[in-house]
Image 1 (tube, rainbow, N blue to C red):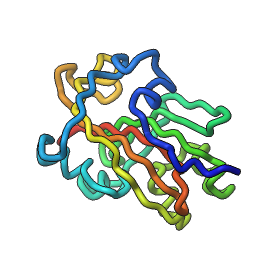
Image 2: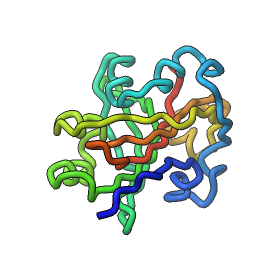
Image 3: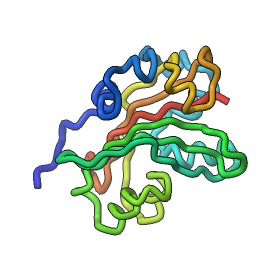
Image 4: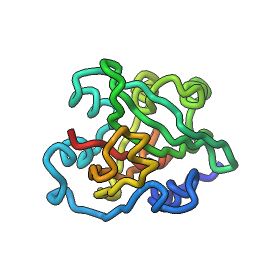
Amino acid sequence: MAVPHDLVPELETLVGLFHPSLESVGRFSESEAEELPPVARKLLAHRHHMTVTLEQHHGTAVDVTAVQKRTDANGYAREILLARQSDGVVVQYGIMRVRLEFLNEPVRKKITGEVAPLGRILIEHNVHRRISLFSLWKVEPSPYLADLMQLEPTHTVYGRTALIYCDDVPAVELLEVVTAS
């Protein structure tokens, strides 16, 4: 099994797993951390799991809902929403692509079972992980994304692309978009 040392979470590639164009999700502008509003910066400009960060910020656990999923030769991918358990408010939209061959069977089953957020699964299974932040994004959501995130269409959101190394192998590509509240 060849280890992909050059894996890069490319925005267009991740969105292209489920949508015909980047514009189907929104207009993305790459940003520096200093350009993000304070809450968005706190939620995105770090090397921690979004599950933990969101739960700490919102003071409640989050649940995952798979909007779309696919399995192919490159692994398992899903488009997701994370919502607060306390009131069901959507706090994150995301797309993840996982190289399942680099994870053990119990972890693979939990991920593809779609019953818990990825970060919680990796933490509960003691998978050694390191998160590499690639880019931060200012996002003007498309009607599709605004509807999914229960936002006004003019509401600006912010995101990041990142890569999770599991046991020192680049195994998970991520696009994570949060509301800045």
